Image (cartoon, rainbow, N blue to C red):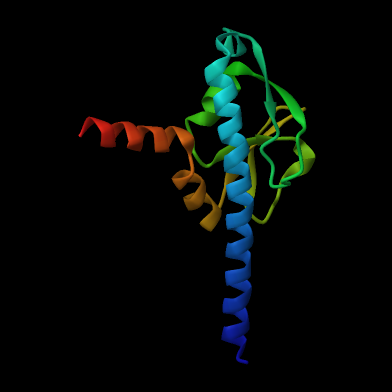
Length: 133
């Protein structure tokens, strides 16, 4: 097996791992979005909201308290997720904001593209557009 073949296999394994992680994170992001839609007081002006940690650990259900304006700001970027500081997966994401008891991370590499495709706000906009046409 050539060095290039080994490198390709490693790259493929990393991409598969990234896909699994991002799919799990996207699912929790969607749960947080549903909570946001169902509870209008959850995002009161200047208030705080409870969300589920959006880390790569599929068994993590850590509750995080974050300012509601932070949640709204994070959701403007489909590549960003909110998680506990000790849950960052350096191979797939980088910290863009440290809030003390939470961090905002941004997906990098192949994980970023998949995060965009799985964004519930983007999917909703595409679906709404399809119904309008």
